[in-house]
Each structure stands twice: as C-alpha cells, then as structure tokens.
Amino acid sequence: MSTALLTDHYELTMLQAALASGNAHRRSVFELFARRLPGGRRYGVVAGTGRLLDAVEDFHFGAAELDFLRAHEVVDEQTLAWLADYRFSGDIWGYPEGEAYFPHSPVLIVESSFGEAVLLETLMLSILNHDSAIASAASRMTWAAGDRPCIEMGSRRTSERAAVAAARAAYVAGFTATSNLEASRCYGVPSTGTSAHSFTLLHDTEEEAFRAQVSSLGKDTTLLLDTYDVMQAVRLAVEIAGPELGAVRIDSGDLGVLAREVRSRLDELGATATRIVVTSDLDEYAIAGLASAPVDGYGVGTQLVTGSGHPTCGFVYKLVAHEGTDGLMVSVAKKSKDKASLGGRKYALRRLDTDDVAEAEVIGIGQPPEGDTNDRPLLVQLVKDGEVVGRQPLDVARLRHVRSREELPVLARTLQKGDPVIPTVHVGGD
Image (spheres, rainbow, N blue to C red):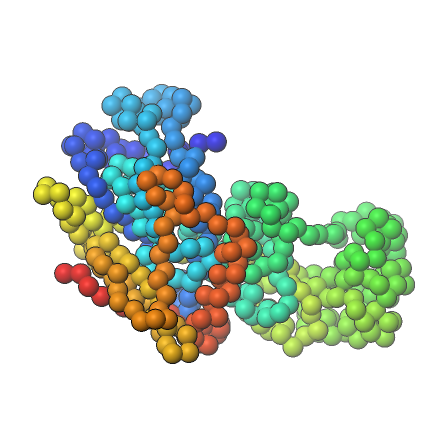
C-alpha cells in the first residue's frame, strides 16, 4: 500500500513551484529535531524508525494516487509526470531506535534533492512525533516500575492504527507485552489478556464466571476481582483455582491498599505464588507511588497511548543546507522569533565521563565533533542511495534503549519537572 498521500497538500504545491523555478533538483539537507523536551522532561526516546523505513519504501505514486491528485487539481501535469517516477534515491541518517535524545539532537538527517526530501516531511514527522512520544512516556513508566513488568493496554483509548504503533513503541521502551493482536502479528510484540468485567456480569454469579474461565483457560489464568466485592472474589478465586492460580487483577479503588489486603488474603489461603496485577488509568507517577505495594505487574492504557500528557515530541523538519550556484553546499536557517533553526549539516556524539556516564550531547556543525575513546557517535545510516540499510530487529532497539537510559546521570530517573539531564553543545560552523 502506498504511503504517498499520508502527507500535507502543501508538500506537493511546494514541489510544483520548485520544479517550475528549476530548484527542485538542488542537493539539500533536511534535519528533524526538537527545540525542547515536552513538559520539563529530562530526556526523550526515539521510536518509530523501523516504521518510518517501511513507509519510505512504500512512498510512491501509483495510478490511484495520481488520478486523485489530477481529479482534485492539486498539482499540474508537469508535477504529476515527475511524481509518477518518484522513488527516494538519497541518504538518510538518524539516531537508531531506542536511543535517548535531547533538545536539538539531529534525530534524522535527509540528504537528497529538495524535491525528493520535501515530500517526506509530513510522513516522517507523523511517525516519529507519535511513536517517540509514546516511547518517551513508556520509558518513564518502565523505569518507575523497576523489575515489575508493564503491559500495554491502550488500544481502546486511541485510533485503531495508532494503537498498533503505540504498542510497538511501548515495547521498544521496555513494556513486556500488549493487549493488541495486530501489534503482535505485525511486529512480534507478545500479546496477553484474559477477561473484562462483562464476562463476569454475563454469568449469573461470580462463582460461575470464575469456574468457566478456569475451566477453559486453565489455573494459570488471571481472574478479575473487582466486579463486586474484592475480598469475597479472592476467596472464590482460590477456592476454584487452588493455590496454583496464576494471577488476579484489580482495576479500581485504592490500588495500594487493596493490593496489600489481597496479598495478605492470598497468602492466608496458600496462594503465595499468585501474582497481583493492577490497572486503572495508571501513569508513571501512579506506578512510582505503588513501588512499596505488593504489586507484581502493571497494565497501562490511556496515559501511555496519549504520551502521559504529551502526545507529540514537537519534532520539526527544517532545511538546513542546499546546493549553491557554485555547486558548494550553503547553510540556511530560519530566523523566526522563538522558532529559529541552526543551519548546516549536523553530526552528533554522546560525551561520556570516565565512568561512562553521559555528560553532554555534542552536535558538530559541518563536520563530526572530536571525542575521546569512550565518547559515542549517535548517527547511523538508515538509507543509502535510496536503499534501506539500517533496519534492525525490535529486540535490538529494546536492548539499545536499556543501555542508553542506564548511561544517563541518575537525575534522569526523577519524575520532577526540570531541565534536560545533560546539555546540548554545538561546535563548529561559521
């Protein structure tokens, strides 16, 4: 399926005007970055790179797309002819998926003709702004959860396609499973789930519901406790499944208090290995607040798929250099108040101290910044001459995220609002 129309109208009208002026062919460098982190957060997480590479491969204009553009008079015939032959043939560099990013980190760099690169703007921003926002929230949640697993359960709180992308992004940032089957089918994210309150309400009694679930799904199932009376449900659950009961779920009330009461009752009944999973509009703050409670796992929905209050990263995509009349590259930049950009092709490394703890995000303008033996270059090539070269398995991104996050100063763990945990330093340039 073509991704070519997942874009804004003005990308195509800019292309038409650039073709008419003879400038669409100019070699150009575009940069995707965030001017700031949202909401006083200390770091962000890059996610969506794999989806982006798939989308770039599928970005072409077939007969259906061209017919639509012609029928709606979006662009002229010269532009339609150019689009009919469109295939991205340039280079793309970027922070690999799972990596931490900071203000002005060159998360993505696109090098090609202006015409080829400008068409990708909306698609790239759409994917990376959404997926990185989810991963940034998920990272805070999994860090707050410690060794306790987090399960993504937000499908019913966002659109159907965003739900799949959100499950993937959460998995990159440490979530262990998802409730979404399409995310499991498409990306291999482990899926899980048992029952909702409607299943209990369907049966004439809670006991009948529990017996039906255990009979069908086995004693390792998770029984939902809070349809009626939680403590009565605990007794029934163990009576029916025995001490081999896999888990129970609490979805309402004071989760910390209830978890302690349920744990005590489970232990009294001999179900000492039965796990307690809590849900109910959790975010990173609620998860941190449950750190001392006898909770074995968290199911997170609404707050995760909405970026825990920040559903976008504020990434922008700006032209930072283009070919001059003499054939040399010329730096260009916006001077707009509060929206200025910094011209020039960027390079990036993470400066580490002698203990391998991050000290700064160092951005070289026009050439790579100098580093020492343990400083870490950040940009990798994702596309070369139009061919994807940087696709990686999702588990590689998960491992990278863990390593990148552990490299940050301990202040990164705090949930209090503040400045980015390391500064961004620019070197070189004019």
